[in-house]
Image 1 (cartoon, rainbow, N blue to C red):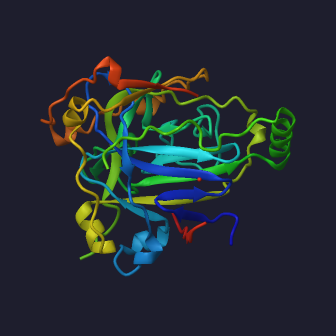
Image 2: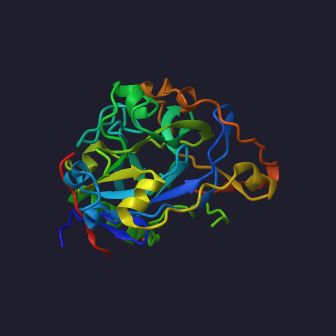
Length: 329
């Protein structure tokens, strides 16, 4: 088994260095105002591209990775865990979701182009505001609505890209020794992830991520020396996003049901979330501040919005499978 192998456990991606990424279904926020963190409504199903070589496009076979189904304008967030410190890059159409810069196989600090695990327990969107992010929302390629299209002027890649960097051997040894001396238990999964109660082949990637509503969420600044991190990534994976009809055609499986109505969720008194941490927040990424919401391309939405009552917003404090094949990006 390769040390750089990426595996699927259930619907979680297991990256080298004990990094875990989950893709969570959630409520889509309105594109006006600033909101608390929406709930998790279950995981997106994730499958290996290599298992469907006869039904995916040739370009997907070349890139390898995994695929998952999303509905038009469906929102998602990424939940993270790690057994040891790690730096994780998150790309949306090969645009860094943290810095807004082009995808790179190197870590950068000015601006920072990664999140630090497990300090960063989740990422709900692009780093576009001070103490806020714009929600990840699925849209088709070709309209210019994706973050990729607005930042680069082209829509070539779509999907989500993940790449993880471990500590250097010396930095990891120091971290393990400090943990041994203090007797502290490392919370590999970070804080508890908020969970809700709801349960012919295409030529290329069908879907990408655009920007939705704004929510209160910080993207934390790395307080380690840059030299503590490895120069090269330990593992990477390309996540292809497909429409439910394409999911059914490619995998033979039924996609998840359409997303839960957000007004009904709020009327039922179910929870939203606020997360507090004393870590320093990154400045908004310049290329991402001007990304327009998907509604500018797809039109205004007509789903009614009902603000959660104060008691519904809950405060929150500070996990072997077959390897996923990587290919040419």
